[in-house]
Length: 236
View 1 (cartoon, rainbow, N blue to C red):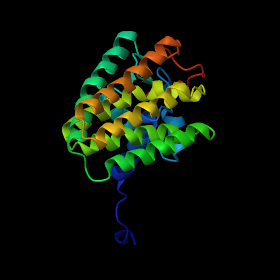
View 2 (cartoon, rainbow, N blue to C red):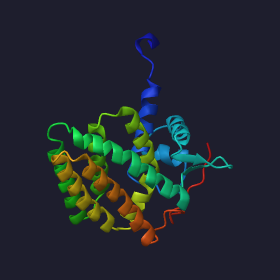
View 3 (spheres, rainbow, N blue to C red):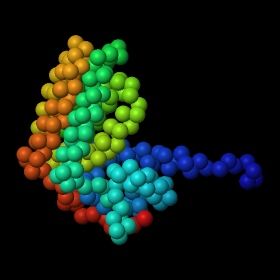
View 4 (cartoon, rainbow, N blue to C red):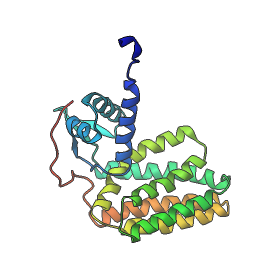
């Protein structure tokens, strides 16, 4: 009887759990400083503890999560110095990639970007749903992928793992202003790509990143401390 069964591919499940948690970090569904539990995440994902534990360990290695001295797992939080270091890195690296994409864009890139930006505007004005975060990420990565720089794209992916929590704070608090302003910068980037103007496209991207960061500090949004929701204590 048992020879008719094939082993369950645990690695596939581990990868799916990892990608699900990674996407949640991208989308800001966890707050900076928030404590995560294996039991809570496994329950939400409908899995056992093992694939969640493996996924968390990978994300710790990528510095998206941290393991405290008490062995609890937390979303990496920011100091002001680290926040601005990441912002400047993003401006430099993502600006470079945007310039390259604009100089030699694939067919219909500008049209695709305008469709995504229109979708983002509709999501902001039509109830401010999570589609705002989805569309914002989709817009940026459509550009970065178009540049065809896989090693640099990997660096950008890791940076976005870190900045997801602060975008999520604005979304959960109902602040649509930085996202609506972002769509205006997106249109500038699209127009530069249509003209194959790499310098203006990169400049628009950098201003988009900088303006959002300045908005957070100007409004004193709590991005350097844990979310007010009560954290769940757990350890690996």
